[in-house]
Image 1 (cartoon, one colour):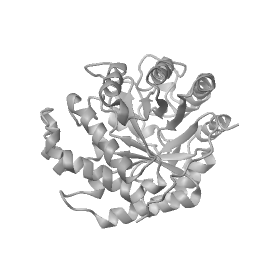
Image 2 (cartoon, helix red, strand yellow):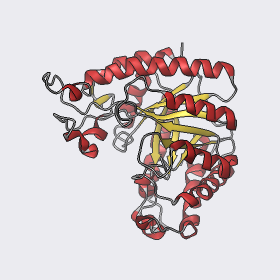
Image 3 (cartoon, one colour):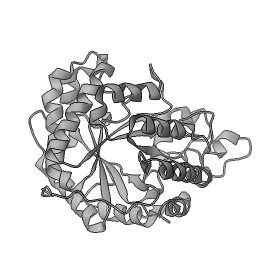
Image 4 (tube, rainbow, N blue to C red):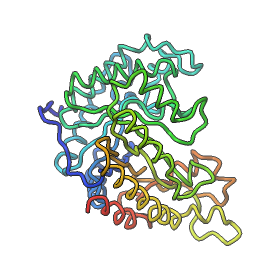
Length: 356
């Protein structure tokens, strides 16, 4: 296991730091070196990746030593390549079946006390084993997202506070991130959910973040719609917290070079992805530059979702309503570790402007 260090590494920052989100296949031991070479070529300082509960602890009370070794290798290679890590702990899609069943999340009748010790154990385990190499820990993921939420709304703040205590005790100096999705169906707005967390668990939160996808998941908008970032910056100043864009991107879900009579789909091919990057990232740059110049509660990071992603393509926007089949698999900057998409060079160029 990677030894716990006394100094958590930091990276040189420009206007803000960029991270690239990695998927499960990216952090496979045979792929991680190639992935990090691509991340470095893009100019990013960080990778954002899950430390999966289901992989580390597939059975209650048992640790999968082989997966621990795999994460050891990933962290070691990141250190060798000079790429820092944002560790995501407890994202809904990574929960093992035993934890889901124990919590009884399916009916949203869960009792946090049933899994509290297990949850604390996971957070402590990740921080003890890899905290010496990691500064930022994202706790849970998009818990305002109706499809991602695993913990009842009234139990989210206790879970955040317990995660903070477990991680910070094992890895002093670490910072806790919480994130919300800006455009998903929910009983309350993303701003209200953040306000709830900051009111009841604010002392456990260092960074508040949005996942914002104008033109893909933020429907009827285009690459220039960054009002959510303006709102986040006001929240940061009001609550004296750092901020981040934990996910952004654009899905190339449509087939390339569709005919003229597919106007909506034509904007969502690989050329559309390039257009998004060349419009959205300069807007982010200008907004964050001005904000960070005038306050100590800075926007610290933005993350591109995701490195690898080139799935089945759709012909029409009606097909694309099958989000999991067509939209979600096509956010990547590369098709695979050997083939880049059209957007790769544009993303590289725009990221470089944040470090000039």
